[in-house]
Image 1 (cartoon, rainbow, N blue to C red):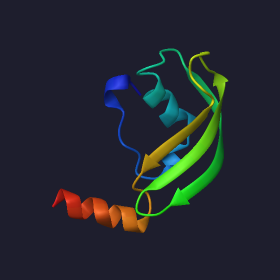
Image 2: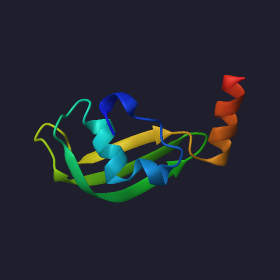
Image 3: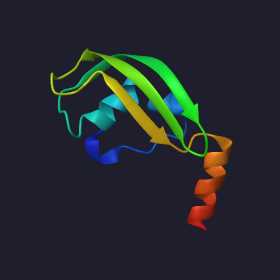
Length: 85
C-alpha cells in the first residue's frame, strides 16, 4: 500500500490493523513498521474516538499512544451520509 493510495477505512477494526496504520503513518514517518496494535478506550457518539497503542519499529518522534477519530457508529454513518447528499 503506497502513501498515495491510502483509503479511508470502512471500520474501526480496519483502522486498527498494522497494515492500514503502516500505510497511513508512512506518509509522515517513512520506514515506520507497526507490528502490533493494542486497542484502548473507545468513546462512541456521532463520531468515534478510539485510543490505541502501537508497537514495532517506531521512530522516536512518533508517540506510541495514538487516537483516531471517525464515523464508525451507525449514528455517525447516518450523519456523514446526510452531509454528502
